[in-house]
Length: 223
Length: 223
DNA sequence: GTCTATAACGGGATAGAC
DNA sequence: GTCTATCCCGTTATAGAC
Image 1: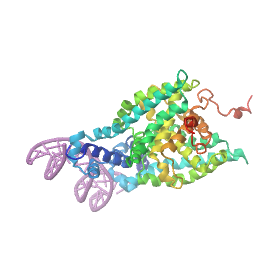
Image 2: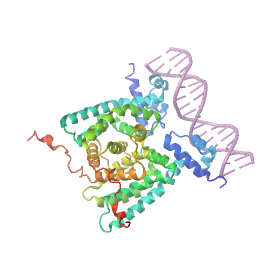
Image 3: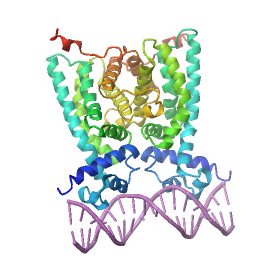
């Protein structure tokens, strides 16, 4: 404990750089510069680069997932015996991760870019991390969504949840902001509300599995 | 023209590797192995690694964007003076890029992973590529969507289009498949139809900008 | 726990023969 | 247009002093 927590300084620096340049695009030497520590310190505290990634990821995701489950519990409790409100379930899933952007002042933008990136880096390390951290979450939310949407099959709910995750992670990366600076992108509570509105309406769309043919008029010429 | 198109073999090999390991995670030497060519051949044909990325990206995206505009033209023509059908506009945007997965047999899966990755790698090169290739597309589709959805402001349409792009690119990366192998993910025409159903319903949600307070009942205790 | 020094290797880029 | 050989730098990881 001589310096004020070298380990956390390293994690924060890595978080910043991973979010900006990706995992493969960041060298440990970049991290040492950013953190103001020595190269060997990283190996002492983490051992390998992969382990550092794990530390960066879990430090943030664990409280997020805990909060997700709390909010889901609350939504289910509020509904009593009935199915929970769809908006409340989606908010339980989306809110904790979006809130980070505001809660951790300064580092929020960094983290959200990082998490967005993670979702599209199918490295083996990342894959294992995701499985470890999301299995329980996914099962719990899947079950809740099935109760909200009795007309949809499980497979379709899984698919729509994936679309939701995609919209969320893309919003977190916020490439949009850099491509179209003239349209400022919403953040925090606004972003959450917009995402919930968007995805709730989408989840409530009639099953696309049931009616395979969206264009019956095209068959008019036949038979 | 001695070997059957060294240049294209290099591009294809790079596409495969970029999609699997990302841009920073792929070395030119990896590309030479995969393509069965020499290291110097890459520098001869492309000059730099960045230029190779440009070549990989544009080879596929240019036909996609051309087809997008064709389909949008068709949708607008079919509607005459009226606003084009929302589903048709979304299909024009999503279909060409999803079709690649089927059209380029074998390489389709590779490409879709690549494009999904691109969307979350805010490298400077990638950013410039996106701007070059998407500016016209975005303007055209924005205009069409504004006609479809007169109750939504421009900023909100931009935001919802970003959510759509996120859902699409995440579906293309298909991390889902690797995390939850027990729920097979839809592809090709099925994926397209599901995405169109999902996003069309979402676009038609009432404006989230207008009604900031989604929980009026919470104010019941007051006043 | 933190440093310096270095091992052992792979990276992109280039020169020049053919 | 394609090769070999090489430059020079950055990479992760480790050994060992303090």
